[in-house]
Each structure stands twice: as C-alpha cells, then as structure tokens.
Image (cartoon, rainbow, N blue to C red; front, top):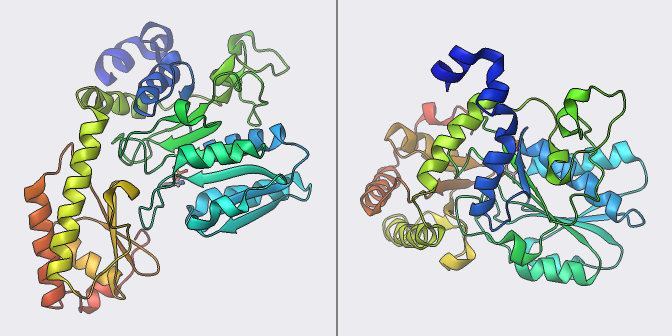
Amino acid sequence: MMRDEWGEMLISAWNKAGWINQPSRVGDRIASLIGAAPGTVVMGDTLTIKVYQALASALEINAERRIIVSDNGNFPSDLYTAQGLIESLDRGHELRLCAPEAVEDYLSEEVAVLMLTEVDYRTGRLHDMKALTAKAHAKGIVTVWDLAHSAGALPVHLASAGADFALGCSYKYLNSGPGGPAFIYVAPGLADKIRPVLAGWLGHEDPFAFDLDYRPGAGIERMRVGTPPVLQLTALEASLDIWDLADMNDVRAKSIELSDLFIELVEDGCPDLTLASPRDGRQRGSQVSFRFDHGYAAMQALIERGVIGDFRAPDIMRFGFTPLYIDAEDVRQAASAIGQVMTDRLWDDESYRQRSTVT
Ligand SMILES: *Cc1c(COP(=O)(O)O)cnc(C)c1O
C-alpha cells in the first residue's frame, strides 16, 4: 500500500485505490465477525469517540427519559464519556451503575439507554447480550454494546440479539496494531433515523459538494466523521485476511480449552493467586485474571521472563488468550513461569515495584 498506492498514486489513491470507501469495506468484513449484516458497520476514530456517538444518538431516541444504566465493571472511558455527555446536555440525565450481576434489576421504564461492555475488562465475565437486550427492549430501552473484548475473541451475534448500537476497537483481539481504528454498528432500520452528533464532512450525504449545511449520509455512513486512518486500516485488512481463514466457533472452542488448561495449571502451582474470572469457560471472554496483592510487581517479573500480560488496579493480573497464535505449549510455559515467579518470590524486587505509565 505504501509503495504502490501512496508512493505512486499520491492523493489520487483516494479514488484509484478506493481509500475513500475503505471504512465501509473493512466495516463489512468486521460485520461478518460480529453477526451483523453488510452495510451496518463502519470504521473510524477510536472507541471512545464511537461510544460518544452511539450514546448521544441513543439518548435522542428516548428523549423523554433521563437514566443511563451501566455496570461498575464497565471500562472507565465509557463511563467518563457518559458523564461528560450528561454535563454537556445539561438536561438532568443520570448515570446509574450497578453490579454486573444486577443489571436486570435496574431495567425500568425510566431508563433511556442500557450501555454495557459485553466482556468485563477486569474479570472477563460475559454478559448475556441476547437476554439483556430482549429485557431492555421490553421496557423500551435502547441498547449500546461495547465489544472491545468480544470482537475476535468469541462469536458475537448482533443481529440475532437485536442490539441497537455496538462498537469496539480493532487493536485488541483483531490485531490491527496500536491505535488502530474502532468500528461502530447501528441496527438496520435505525441508522437512517438517528441524528449523528459528530456531524463531520465524511458523514455528509455528499462530502464533495462542500455544502455549507450538513445533511446526514445514508445509513451507517453518517457515523463517519473525518479522514480515515488509511495506514492503520490497511494493517487491519492484512489481519482480517488471516481471520478469513478461521472459523470463530473453532477459535472460541480453542480459547476455552487453552484458558481452562491455564487455570488448572496456575491453580495447581500458585496457591497465592485467586481466580478473578468465571470458572465456567462459557461465562468468560478470552482472558483469565487472577488477583494477587503484589500483582503489579509479579506481572513485571513475568514480562521480563517473556510472559506478557497486564495489570489492572487494584490487584488484577490479566492474561489474554489468542488461539490464532498461542497453543497449549505456550500455556504450559507461561504457567510454569508464573509458578516460578510465585514460588521463588521473584516478584519481591524493588525494581518491579516502580509503576510505569501504562500498567
Ligand atoms: C480498550 C477499551 C476502550 C479504549 O478506548 P479507546 O478510545 O480506543 O482508547 C474503551 N472501552 C472499552 C470497554 C475498552 O475495553
């Protein structure tokens, strides 16, 4: 792409190489991974921006209601976005947070929007998207699903679940690389009715008319904002070529097998670690987390030994399982390194306690 398109065609590649349609073209490929129809997903911006767009449009659909329900396992950026939007709107909206297990009890006819991340970023606990969407709809609630830890991690069935809005990033399980663009889904039939709150020129019906007034583009196109990140989208397309070779059900089966094995080996070798993820693989995303008071230091010791996970405050050691390039032997080696770090207290070293910016 850099040599033949950018290098040779320069800006004419927007037409000649189809860069201008890349957000929808790639969106269709993501759609096939998350159970959505072609023409319902578009790429662009980062996930936080997509949360803002979806939530703002969703609130307008239920304009007479004032409550947004989410859970306290949701990712801070999603919650901050809701808080910021509530302040900007200044119409008395309220963000109500509940425990992940209690969402159902919070659904009532005063709720405008149910906004959840399907897989809890800390524990990996999986919400039942279909059941909760049905319960929300029965009370007239619009749903916004964050698939950050679902897309590429497990089969997702947006259309059959009846989800209204969904979004996710491409740089976690979809491997687009750091800073890769997000995707947004709007249910067919709904996209043409919503008002895009970020009215950018590439979401306009006819961007190159350069009208002074905004007219929303057709369907999901209106969720585009500005110039797409072509280099990152091209990296994502290369990753999706690999996803084309895989069946998501096989990936899921392997992910459960590997993570079950990991739990078994780590629990055998490390009595000081407490499982924070659901034990039943069907209730988890594609990650396993353990609690440990010195989790940050222990993770640094592991990273130095080639086992690269992350730490989520206050005490979560999180390990991701990506069957496209990890197998049982990797899991055994990782579990053995964790066993060594714990048994020999290798984490108990001043240098591992220095917190870096990114944990
Ligand atoms: C990773 C993640 C984000 C990050 O959003 P960016 O704008 O891409 O930085 C937001 N929400 C959830 C649920 C996430 O897991």
